[in-house]
Length: 454
Image 1 (cartoon, one colour):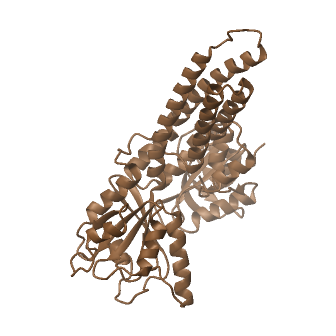
Image 2 (image 1 turned 90 degrees about the vertical axis):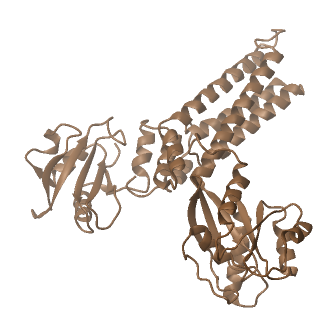
Image 3 (image 1 turned 30 degrees about the vertical axis):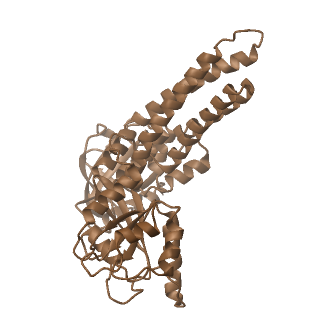
């Protein structure tokens, strides 16, 4: 029997109410030990809010609350559950949980309620992971995408995809087991056609999921460049607020600043970094090191160049670094006398996308936002997708790669046994994505990202 767990389901701090959640067999009887109403909770209909008071173990009343019970199979966790709606504040909910724990409950771990919902079969793993996507959604489209996944639409498509792969695998295995059948149970032409259709379906699904991942994770964009070229001013212009300190002194920014704004429904995680240059200042060295790390890890780099200054060796070195990465060159300070033109930059960096802006006057900022989005999305509309995680994308990509390996094995006549191994890898990756053969380590990793109480 699972232990009874409890946690605060709402945020800590002063508020209208604070909801304490309780789940596990015996939750109702445990709650009745501190709840006093006209009737015990056990005697109340399920899902019926009732007024009462909370009493401590020494008999003192400490809050007036509303409480509701849920039957097993009809709660968030699919277990017997109780919610107690205390007054918001620091002490009422804390005292409620302390009393419950003193009588046999224990504090829940991060994500434990949602994990129990998955283990008890009320939701599948993609739905469970989508819960976090809904909580952390930073745009309407991100919310809609995660909501579609939470409702089970993504898992349904995955199961259909897995069933189709399993069907083809079954025919291949029968042919391997009964080699005396000359024509086989499925012709090579039919196998190739079905496999081609599966690959096409997988690629289409991956494309839809890629847009969902962008909505969920946002576009991680690092602003890089030499000191005093206007990186912090550009950050402020993009955010439309004075977020970073701006001074004429080179090297003002020593630490990375990360903020989020939304453009065309897509979250953009913008990172202002320390100016990249050779320095003997110990603190600035740490900042430069973090800048280089941010540059490497970002989805996109916005390389800022001061239009009022000549290119120097530090610029050229930075240009060599970013040339192999996805980037945009921003020629800043277009409102000032210029020593560098876009044409000159194109001669030095012919493969780079270049835009001229004035961070101070916000000229060209909206166009820059459009370019940031287009560089990652390729101009496609990021709508109608599923809110997926990087883990799910990796599993789906691996499954698709295994299907392509299967196609290669069959087309080159390398043997049905090797083809079956490849297609089994595809099925295994999809099963892991769906949580059909999820390990404890995988579940620990997924649910540890949740907040306590969810």
